[in-house]
Amino acid sequence: MKNRSPHYPVPCIQGRDSGGWGGRLMGNAVGAHLLNTLEGAEWTVAYWRDRNDEVDFVVTKGLRSWGIELKSGWGKRSGLGGFYRRFPKASTMVIGDQGVPFEQFFGESAEYWIA
Image (cartoon, rainbow, N blue to C red; front, side):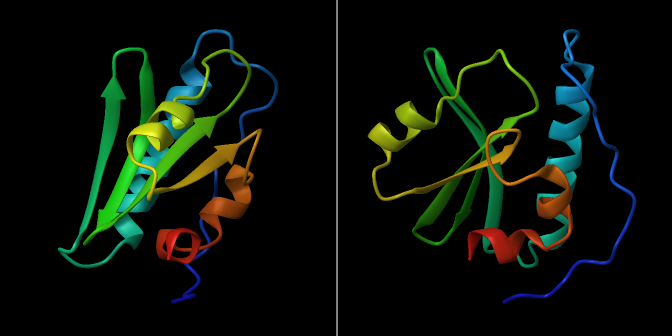
């Protein structure tokens, strides 16, 4: 399903955010976008952590899962490798500096990206 989400302003974080506020802001915005655009009770949105590996969001529908990692600057290493080793049938996605740009992600419904 490729429904466009309504256009709304997206806060853009410029430069590296040494204090972490930009990353937290974008994490909240992505989480809200996932919850607001994935319609129906069959979707779940959570996070995953196993020792030192963590993934920002895990979206599940039925038997399919997607691990989503946000990268808004340098620093935190990605836990997608550990997630994929643990769940090899899951799909993964990076949003931000090293993947789909935030502005592009917010321009479509979450279902567009993970369906």
